[in-house]
Length: 362
Image 1 (cartoon, rainbow, N blue to C red):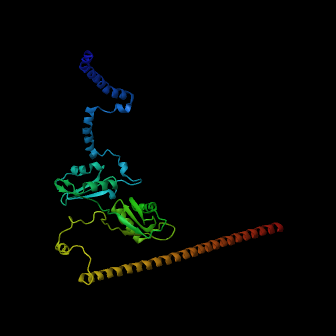
Image 2 (spheres, rainbow, N blue to C red):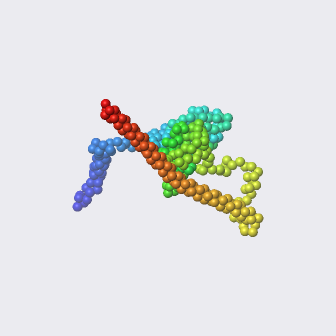
Image 3 (cartoon, one colour):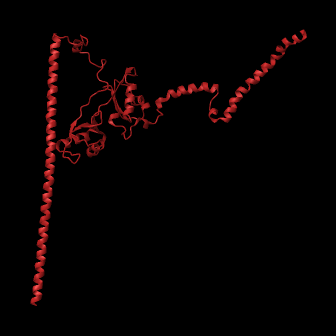
């Protein structure tokens, strides 16, 4: 029994190396299985080893640093039918360094695609340039506004469109395309918009953006002197210069000049005027003045609306009368033509009778 027990402890000793060998055997096929899998499965064949995977993050980090090259397709940032390099995609860059070069200025916007019409005024510290689309210009503005360039925070804004006209008195059948067709006679048009309300109903107003100021000035002069009709109804389009407003960035504290009036007006915080006080009395008078202005504008709008409705009724009656007059004139013309043909017929009959009488006499 003891002899049987003695070999028992020896068995683990003698058996200890074989498990190691088995472990090595079990370890050896482990790397061979992915190789076999790689041979069978092509997608897994592209998976790199651990050493190559360690190199991939570096390559990915390099690719992360590469958006400056902008490998994306620029057509992704272009709306269907949108024209490129228009004044809507022009940027105004303020507070630039006087010693900045044109190459450095263009390089700031290299990741946003191509640039055109680059202009730098080093004396006044600003620059202008155009990007391909409006969306790219908005992205560049959002990312670069306030960034440090040569230790100076630049200010990036969408430049105002100096060749924009405002039109009104448009009929409900006028569309963007019809506006562009009508105003292209004055010069190249970049964009035309018929303004609608939140339900898509036309408001009778629109915007026309020309490619240059010469075309806009020509359209304004011609439409002011004459009457441009867009449809069958003789309702002329009214053209006016468009005022430019900044409705996106507005006026911030950091750019507002700190004048004496600024400090005087800012002595008190925003508050509601208390009834019975000096502030409440004059605030009420201001409000009454605003209400009076609002009421008068509403009355004027009502009078103009009624006058337009009356003019439309008179126009319909005049068109009907004009059509009747044209029909009467056409009827008189046809009657005159019939009378003339009848006279010619009578003359021809008279001539034949005379010829017959001569033959009889002969």
